[in-house]
Length: 286
Image (cartoon, rainbow, N blue to C red; front, side, top):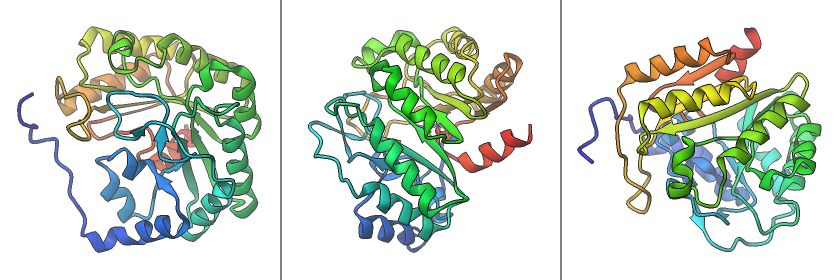
């Protein structure tokens, strides 16, 4: 792939501005997807005192080739993690928080109860904080999806990640149709909760596949769609096949809105949890 184009640039804040969150995370022995996935937005978010928490450890049981999170055999769950997450949110004074996880296919309920325990503990300590859960697929088990629904997060997010053709190449242990069924199930079985999904482009898809995938996602009834440029986190992940211009992301945004999404956040550096509070505030007003 050729050198990154001029619009793929991120300002790096002074390191001292990032230390507040790093010290807090280390003090409570927590993880963030910001650090573990090598997110390009980490500096901007940490500078603002915002982090997306990664629960159930930092080792994933799957092997998606775009993701920098460690793969292998995870450690047992930290039963105190929900309380530590709640304490971190309190210290950071977050009014909206995003909680995500590694995929834990090794657990009996794939980690659904740990999500619920985390939400309950957050609400116990941070009564006014709104909660967004970015969940794995729980292997499509609706009983575990119901547990997520019933703990009443304001937003439930499950990322489709990419166009269906690329699943067998880049996400061999995941299934596009299963994730699609999950989004439909969430939308059909929630009330006054927003359903969100996200995808990356630049992995080798065609423009036609991008538009078709947006169309398929719109039919699930999802409220919020995020679209961002895939950026290779390290040399261990698949290379970028194509860099899309900012104007193309605007075109995708308009297309998504025309299909009925309540909110489409489409830009080069968009990630599913980036500016999550601003997205939530905007959709509440719409």
